[in-house]
Length: 331
Image (cartoon, rainbow, N blue to C red; front, side):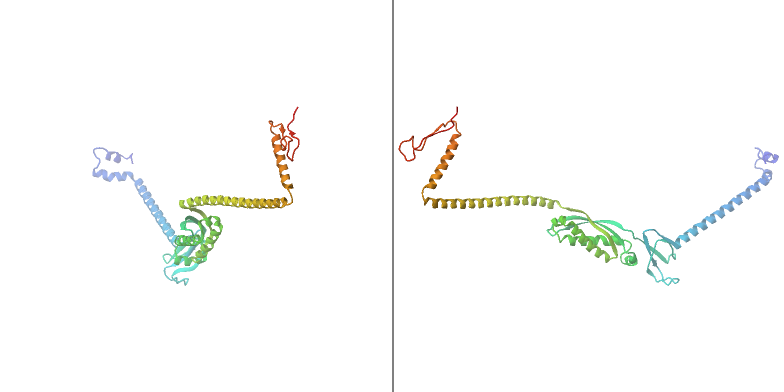
């Protein structure tokens, strides 16, 4: 079209916009304009078909998702019917059958699946309670729990999907308070395994009433208040003082027994001495000689004594005259 003289003349400055040019310019383009129109029409048709196809796929996807549902691993589902199902004969409300893992079909709007997590889940439950001797104790109980799969319809009807939140904290606190109240604070430390076993038995029985299975129960944290720690320290000091006093009493008792035995021995010896004196002064003379021997041995160790005179006063008079004794004679 650019080589057409009508096109060049019509697009000149003087004649642009005249009626003659308005008739000749479209003819200058000729078949090119018709091709562009056909291409544009074909593109619009293709885009329209593509949009319709996308819309159909979207509608199909929504429709498919409305008639199927998935139950993941470790989960179970129960079905809630808003109306009685005329095709299967099921009534309205929660159905008794438990749906296992996988992909399942449902009637849109008429059926609503309720999915439960049936895997074992941990839970820590702290509580503050009192012992038999009125001491406050902080206890943390760790539970591993899961629902009874066969009783899921009953659990949903009575408790709902958050059954563990409703039941476990309340029954755990109840059992802990009742068991701990039977023991003193000191017994809780010494008999921890017995206390834990008793809590496990009672809590398992209470959880079974609500169709909840407890895999494991353990006491992970047990502490007392500052008042109890101070009382324990004072008690230990008092026990040590009592032990010391018992030792003092036992020592005094032993000393008393020793004095009694000593006195009995001295009395027996005095009795025997008095009996011996009835037969003569021999015993007195023996004791005098023994005393003299001990004195002589003691004086012999002294460097200042070299002569021990006799009892006779140098041999004059007296009935016991005898010669003196020289001690520690050295060259």
